[in-house]
Image (tube, rainbow, N blue to C red; front, side, top):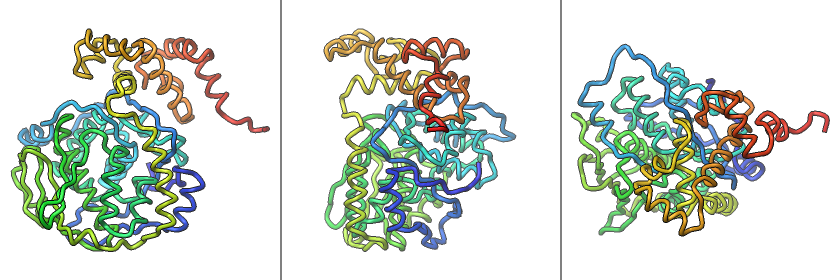
Length: 420
């Protein structure tokens, strides 16, 4: 995969205008503690109103000449099974980081997912099950032999990686306004454990609990580091951090974290907590633009409106089905287990909402199939694999039942005629 900058894939004409206003964000503050090269070009993805669910096949297996020490592996594996989605752009960042370290992204991501990342015109704001992303992070850490992958990866995140939301942040008046947008729109990036902001004395405290599961050291460290790094980029100066706590087990050496954040970093705490001085929120941003802010917030509000509401059992069921599909046809018992419900309770709750499991499964599988069929770089066999079919013929029969035509005919129907 080459480090080329794709065309803006999000919000089409509006985001093109946004780039002309904002210009390419430099993203470098000259921090001496920064250990990741910022030379990789940002990859912008479409933040359109068409939000879809995405799934991936089993992660690739590979042999490594070495392995992380057992205590490191145990620390990085200490997490819960989580249900939620992350934007595919986070996988773009991971792929670029792998490349910068001399590792072909396909070794960690697998061929179907790696192929999707080179698209210059994403037609959807694609999302990936958070559980799959957590496993990718662990495999990347093992492949790179890097126990600090979360810290390193977070430093590579730029506003441009967040698509339309990134432009909203760039256009804000000051750091406080940008953080308020991160809180308001956090579900576009992380819909697992919400941000809980509170003011305590002269400090702003951002907290992440674990009510929906512990996401693990790699996920948490890359996310918190990414917030701090984006804050530095937006302000053009080092962002002061008063305190930082992580819920995850401690590393044997916390000094790399304390050098980057510039404060005491504690681990094994009840919650993950980032504390900033209130006065830092007034720091002006370098590219404040009220007109651009209004324009891009409209796009982000549209994207937010398409996300499922908390408690939407039908949508949660479809998400889990999409997540499980590469492992084979998901049955009700298995989906109920993922949702932490007994099969009987799950069935009753679906019935109470007028929902049928078989219909939800067919709809979810068809939606995932159509999303992958739009990507002409994927063969029909690869699309079938992404849905858990070992034979293309079985996938074709299922798709014909869903759509009334073969996968090839559906794909051809979506492609404009060259003579039109």
